[in-house]
Image 1 (cartoon, rainbow, N blue to C red):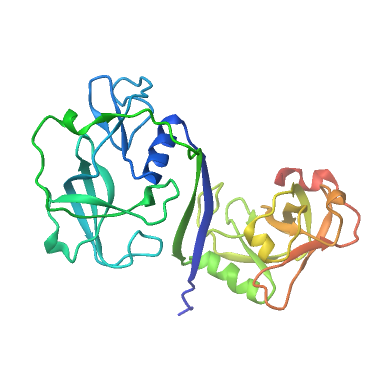
Image 2 (tube, rainbow, N blue to C red):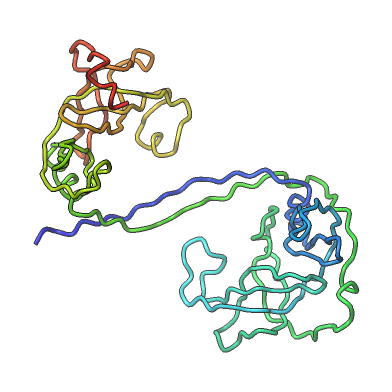
Length: 322
């Protein structure tokens, strides 16, 4: 039985967002230990605030300050915190309706165990010691022994201008997905062939096209593929782009901008794969350029492709692979 391949993979990028006046006031308020909501046309107070009324779609700017205490409306226990979560010890995810608010805020509750959490539990904000203008300025919620005030919600609400010194105007949030990838039969064959510095595709039994990398089925005919075909190693640049922005993964590999990333139709393949072009100035890369793979001692796939010195391929030879 063939070995089952798997590998841990990470997709990660920083998400940058500029803030409008409502979100700017909300996050700057957290930095100043102030929780702001927004009042809708029918008098409801929304926390966190939004910029448009969810009922009427009208723009809303009537900011109000609500309390730092509230009531848990619902919760879920997290026995095993993960990387990047607010607490490193077991905690509860909670929806908290702060005093004066009509909606609930999602955050975490620091509690000894699930038996200490319940809907209706009174809680209060524990502010972070260092605050920057982010939702994490609320470090967590903790149980509070005060009784809820049954007076009108408006009694807990104070109008606020939303004006602060040095307002937060943008945020950068790291987005990350960790997962384990297990390739199927077709891709396992492709990966195993790369270990021997060979590139294989699979031929469709119907249209006879060879697809690289193989997926186990023909994307055109929809029939299963199993016949392996070795392609390349040489190929032709079909299209390309010049990269001028340095990314973290290329910087770690010592790749300097500008560089060229291209679609390359390997000889014998009916689908172009992508790869970096090296060994030639970026402004001399062109469609039809004949290239060959360059391997490094530790690479699991070609490090880059370089010119072979052959004459450029005729356009008619690769126009169907653009």
